Length: 116
Length: 115
Image (cartoon, rainbow over all chains, first blue to last red; front, top):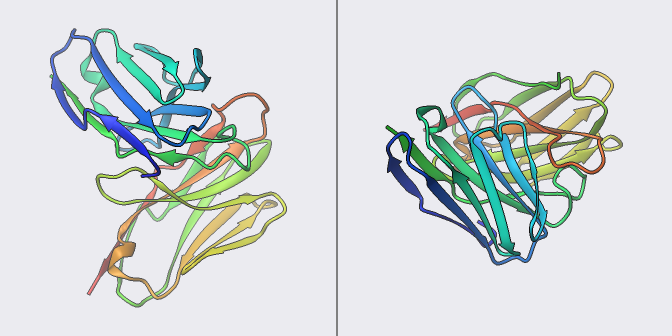
């Protein structure tokens, strides 16, 4: 998985509790992304980062926040988890901007989150 | 609205046979198109990336084609193997500078290769 780890790999939590997912890379890539994957939907971008402390929203950012204090770590926080946030979350990295021809993305193994 | 549609949704083939997966898109303006393979329980892995000027690209037994005029792409798998069982995701990038949020993902074709 191209030097990308995600933790935890599985999590069960209750509605209303905060949850933080961690993505760690050893590739020194500039760009990092958080996606969610749900049945019947393609991967959807939650937030992304284009450098340390530089982040921006994706198409499904409501209810999520992110932080990147180091090149290698990108954290996704659900401030108050809801059942609609039950999903599989993938982190991805790329050297170049993800949408550009050179922006091949490498995905982590995913975190399966269940919100009861 | 940018959209990527893949067909079929699922497919079962015998080992050793060939198959072709389809991707139609309405993303505009077009930048590039990618195919990913996603094994069950794992993250997607890139197979090919094609720009507007490329109409065929191969990666081993995988050959992707692109017709930018009709906005269609296909992924052809030759001499399928059991390890080809996975979901195949088509992703299209819009040519919009300065943002990573212009990748549109299809919902994938789930391929099962059987004995």
